[in-house]
Image (cartoon, rainbow, N blue to C red; front, side):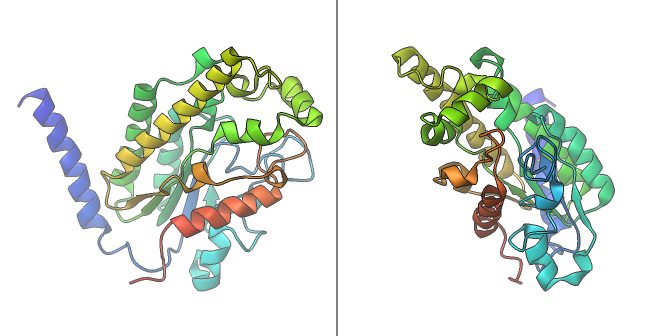
Length: 275
């Protein structure tokens, strides 16, 4: 068999496995869930101790806020109680997603959220950003792991937030500028934040375009799997405001930001009550 046709046949086999195995599990509320991703999903910098994870505040699996996916599902299906796993890792790039997917498979969950890729664009420099083809290949491997290991699980893939929006709403705030300088977060976008020079604006647009390209890959790969749903760029397109950003680092979502992420992603996700 020629390599090209072998690859197509393998991809089709995975699709069919997902379609047949998931047919009985794609309706109703799930009884277990797991979150994968990076510091956004770990709710970094929303707890009592600055610059630490606070997963109980996570938009996805968080237990303290009624807007989270876990709490909304819990209100309809008590069987999910205590079965909300946060497998995200602060600082993770998409290269780590396959590892997280393996853990998620071992947990045998019925619902998975994925929000990954911000660190692949928000790098130490523009040159350090993950190439688009590499991003896609790494995401494909993670999806293969999830689909093969959890054929009946529903998977929600969330678009990467727009980093240019962060710069736009905060680059005139001296506190944000100082925090960005001290933390070094997202230098690819936030280096020389007060500069209006064409070279800096052009760089920012290239970083933004990389996120657009990443989101396109997330959408395309997700579409191969019947149990996967992309958020339609709902998070990328959302006009986040200053109150949605942590005042500790002026980079990660605040509690209000986590709540808004929960609301936006829930609206763009599955209608669990159907069926």
